[in-house]
Image 1: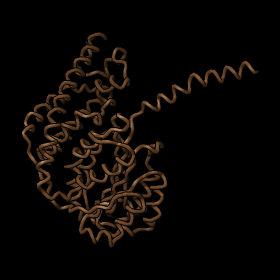
Image 2: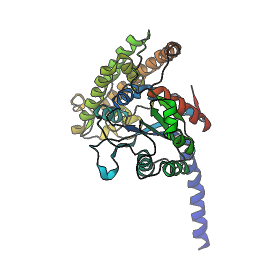
Image 3: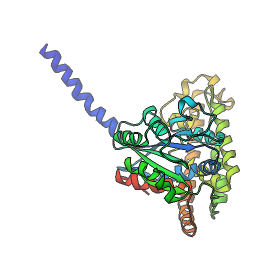
Image 4: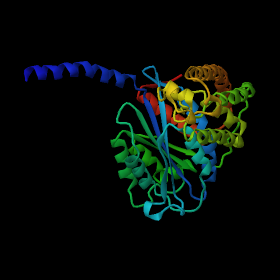
Length: 370
């Protein structure tokens, strides 16, 4: 019995360091739930969200904690329109927390608005309870709720919802679409204060200023080259690839600047596609290329030998890395140029409000930005 107990202790001593090492190697998270009012007056808010998603992603891609790059996860809710079920408080979880940023983009472009009742406390409470948030207290967990009706509406008291959020380490930031003082008088600021968040106001109807930069032309060309390095595989790989192309088209319909930001995002570590792209899948150790059924491969790879398959994926991976590195080089110069030009204008849009709050709250948790 004693020998058996000693054996168990020995196993524990062998495995416990490995467990701690695994935890140590885990990248820090930024988890962000975006709660958008989709009532009839919020078309401008949705347009800003569609055009500014990739700029927000690119700024967050610059963050680090303890020298490690972050992993970004985004959830999306809509609330406040009559076409959503009344029994659920006129709200809907569109996406749970996910690293699939093309999915978030796709859903933003599907959103439509109409009239309804906006229950801020209820949608906050639902996001807190329904989403699978990180258990790590060092990870940054954020809710951003945007709207323009009183924060006090609905059966769920916003004060209880916000206190519930912060008790679980989830910060609630409030964005009032309208006059700053009106947002205070309708309790939007109070909601943020209760959950250690930031209260902000924006003009949801302000047209987003598209600042052209000297690097843009080359970045667009590199974006096209980058798309050629994706190798769709699996039963639904071609569907995901098609979705990627659709989100490129959606970004371009917003503006050239939105498309540039998307190209830059696709060169960052936050843009992950291991579920359908062989290059990302191999890098993440999610597949054994040599053992994949030929039917799951794209046509160009079906008749390749295992060695040829591996070489093809390696070549595409190397090409992608070279393109991404060049995009990042150009982006460094572009960011400086854009920052200088942006300082000349009054920017009261969704992205500037969110990024200001994120940076402030991230730094309090020892995140830094390049």
